[in-house]
Image (cartoon, rainbow, N blue to C red; front, side):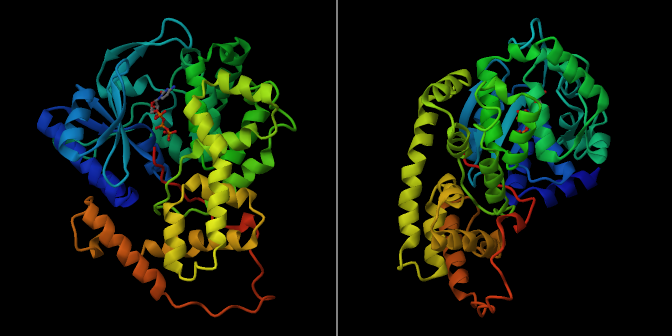
Length: 437
Ligand code: CTP
């Protein structure tokens, strides 16, 4: 049992693990059972970086979220009163969802289900795929006990995506899109019966029942995918991209740009601080080749908000300004470049990697990703003489990083023919991006 807690401590970032411990304590004080579930467990067990923590509570999750806001300084980002869940942003940047353990009863495909409080076992059995239905107890009497009623751990080991029940795609047809997203993200195979359920649901025209807000939520999730190129290819192959726009399949879907975006995101090493709002850049690439009417139709179909559209339209100007800053001859020290890029929106940095024709700018960004950000990890929290999570701590840590960057000896320049400039495709695989919401 202890092994799973040990695995968690090793896999999560220090900040994420601290949040797990604090939430365990808060739930304990409130007398509620709390579990780590969903994507957080799946990604930990499969060895992928965890983006958000998912907690499930047997009891009042919204109340617990409020206590976390008050006692842990978390920011309540959103609440869903129907599903009884809340999204929280903790000091230090960890994001988490806290949801009530629930059963969902569907009266109509794609419609809002009836939500009933449930035990953790009942909750897990209602979920979409077995790999998403593993929980880890954080409760005193059973700390570290895995709860796995559908053998999700076995499927993670076999690298297979399997629906939990035959009606999964009928209950929530948006799961057909989720299946492709997890396939692209995890590189898992789709089990044969699940594929047959998928085909049957398509035959029964379930795709037309995906509600507009579900399509929009899924588009936002797609934008977060590091493997955007693989995902868009899969969606085109499966004729699912048509759901967003009948104009997209074919030459108007810029798959090469999505692959470039995927490679750019793979440059960001796991564990480093990189603030990214992925939607504006994703929309930029998605809409690039569509005409004005096709763009407007797509944005309406997916319920993209005005603010989201504005952010995407402004990206070009924000990136151009960053490009000018990055060309400056004043950026002599590594710490100066680090500071400019740390403060820049991540989406503008990646936009330049995709679109800039300036060699100097591209080289500086690559240096930042390949040298400076990894070097910043050499300064660990333990080395900072301040309380983690406080502004004083942040400041002290940043200062130590800047000093370390400028103190690093420069490697002598290699003979030009010995080390050719690496092609985009040769950058390390498997990293993640830490998102700010
Ligand atoms: N879930 C589901 N059916 C859906 C949406 C979600 O069964 N249509 C369940 C899954 O068990 C999922 C959990 O709710 O793991 C949380 O959903 P979500 O946050 O959307 O996904 P994650 O699995 O956490 O994946 P991601 O990494 O994309 O956030």
